Amino acid sequence: MFADLHTHSFYSDGTNSPQEIISLAKARGIRALSLVDHDTVQGIPDFLSAGEKQGVEVIPGLEISTSIQGKRIHILGYHIDCENPFLAEFLSHISRARTENTRMILDKLNQMNWLDYPWERVRELNLGRAWVHSSHVFRAMMQDGFYADWDQWMDFYYRYFGKSSPAYLDIEGFTPENAIDVIIKAQGIPVLAHPKLIGDDEQIRPLVEHGLKGIEVFYPAHDAADVIKYGEMAGKYGLVITGGTDWHGKGTEWKVNLGDCGIDAALFTRLKTFRLQEEKTSEKGKGKKGSSC
Image (cartoon, rainbow, N blue to C red; front, side, top):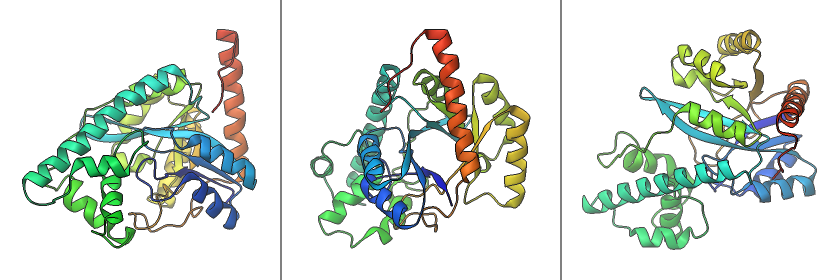
């Protein structure tokens, strides 16, 4: 596979550092990669630096978690300017909401005697992270010897932090339109992630009308019929095609290896060309180009 455009690091809910992801990609012969951590660009500088050192072409990105009518919809942003003030403000708001949600669930679990682990210790062992995810709670508890390794992570998540947990609390919602707007303001390309998982293709057209520029056609949960369907949809709406594994590392839900799913060199070139076209349009409208990460 030439490019895997959907990977996550330990700055959101992955298990590996950005540098480790680049090293693994290099070893597996992957030529291009994008880091799209959930609701943060904190790992992008290390990712770009490691990619340059190891000769792996990288795209700065992120994945914004949104919902509409009870459906979770994730919007990927590629080629973003991660220093954009609109993006920084938006992510700061999300970070506070997400961290508070994690704290409240952990407090509830402690009150119910399902867990006995202080929030202060979680924060202590996750200093410097933009926001605290349930995987960071697990990482802290693993460091303190409560769990042996990441093989136990998914069981931990579903038992304590998933929707079936008695301590589950829904998080403040952001709409897909919010995400599309902020990605465009950050000179990025907004792309709909894993459309099959939404379970409602009728949600796609309104997003295109709002400014969606791409769709993730190649994805582990998409079968051959899905690839054809979403590929045709990309053609119909003039959307750029992307793809990737949604790789989170060891112990995570998808039983895939980095690079098992993604796009070929031609589609990767198309994504870069699309970005340049968008830049030219932006320059004509604003008279200047935003900085890169």
